[in-house]
Image 1: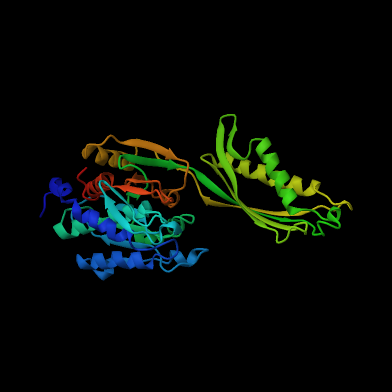
Image 2: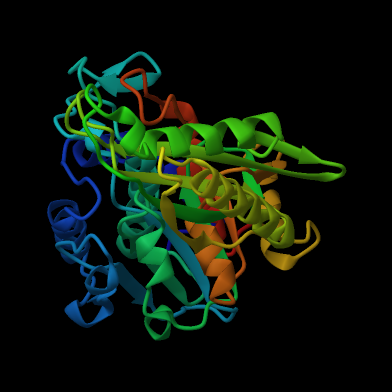
Length: 397
């Protein structure tokens, strides 16, 4: 049996080859079947039993549908200790489809200039797979382990939200690999409420009788202008409370000679403080309601709105002295890096893991420039992520 303290020396060219192969496989959100089957075949090749490989039905609960659910693999422990979970998401953003990964020096980028690389989060998915393969191939001692490849992270953390918790085996320490440098441990993240606003005005001929119409666009413009002027749009600071908000989608109108009578807007409100996030949402509701009531035609008729908000994910924050944070930082230190902790203003699969009662630290894999054609993967950082994952999986930190 390979000694645990020697295990990190097993990480090298095979890990790089693995991530290169995985980056080349398309798998945007909802279309993860091909990359999931690649992982399953790799697991079979190293002797993982079919009974240990499971898919849940998370995609069946997704508003986007999908080809496949979350991939979950459980290993019984060979040494005593609480079960540990390692996770990453399978999907990439659509811009990554068509990626041709190529190594140039210490970086991996897409040879196709029209695509992003997909290191977010194929580097994380490869980190998990590399760890499991090394444990199996070299019979490394380990506590009970769960490997969890989540689907549809990029479209709202769908896989983590709808994971079948009973399949995870009640892990006590959970680690998620996503974007950023390898020494970064994200221990908290903001919450996000989705806003859906439908504006109904009154149509009329914009040339002959514009005064008979009520423009849905004018209602939206007045509402958004009010939100900007009163400090509720963009970066929101009210005393000691902070958050952000944005209208990101506006759809409506078909002709310039018609007063637009229907508009659909989509937006978001974020804050680490759920109560303050509710205030932001309330400000949006009031602004659009007031704009609809006060925007009238010559006959005194006004428009109306339908306003809906829903929680995409709730904020969370782990205590720096908690066992899971301390374990992550100890592994980072052991490979010679200085651990840094941060709180994120973006959502993570860890948001929903925390909501499920599974406090989860998110670690980096060396990706940068994600969701753009400038995306690159730093190879040394990725290898460090693999080293950290192996330490955490084998209790050798």
